Image (cartoon, rainbow, N blue to C red):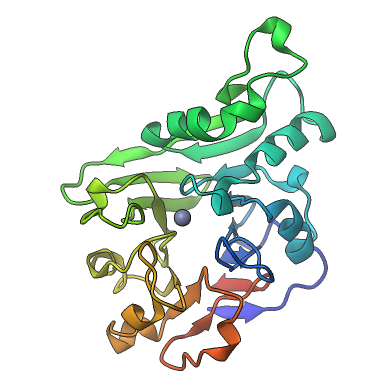
Amino acid sequence: MKIEERKGNLQLKNNGALEIVFIGTGTAFSKVLYNNNLIIIKGNTHILVDFGFNAPVSLNQNTGLTPMDIEAFLPTHSHADHIGGVEYLALFNRYVGTRTFNKPQLKLITTKEYQKIFWNNSIKGGLEWNEANNEGKMKLNDYFDVHLAESIPSRYRTKYKFNFEGIELEFFGTNHIPDTAKTQKKAFISYGLFIDNKVMFTGDTKFDKSLLDIYADNSELIFHDCSLEGNPVHASLDELRTLPVEWKKKMYLMHYGDEWAKYKINDFAGFAREGVRYIFD
Ligand SMILES: [Zn+2]
């Protein structure tokens, strides 16, 4: 893996190498860092993973892109630092962009279990009614071209797989909320991703060694969420320090607080940085 600084606007096409760019690496409460959201690029394909409440700004600041450049979106879970910008994304496509009204072109990659919750509990309020309502209420697929991942039977953890135009994705459920959920299957829906059989992106999760036991050895690199202090619904830095040395050496911390620079983390690969290109040859 090599890290390259971005020169000019981020290019959403490359020579076919897997590439990951964070548009933000902060917690939900950061005032300096942006929401922990990222873009996966490979060949002619890209996927925006999460679009939080400050992502309309961070997308521009850290990539130079606009929402009209984005062709596919994947939400990990319902917290606002992950999906708070989705109404903006959907309405920008409808009103500011030149995409057709009648045939939504923004692709949504999600699961059958999450698509209804995503629409009904999070975004329907701002999107259901608009100028077109003489034709009936708007629905999720009026805004998005929905692509559903395929369930993988698994006893202890929810899993899905999806090959999106050459990017191999495995969704895995994480044990993020509530703090009392003892296992992933008792927790509310939240996904992480195993990307192209080489990069583990945990999404939001409590410290969960059983999750790392599945993917860490097979990962070239791990992006793990990290609360710098103790936290009931996120893995903390102290908890992550208890992991095997060989996992920590390839682990970049993400979803961290503004005071990150005060922390010495020489046992890890580093803090993930906003706006730079992580390229996997
Ligand atoms: Zn969360």
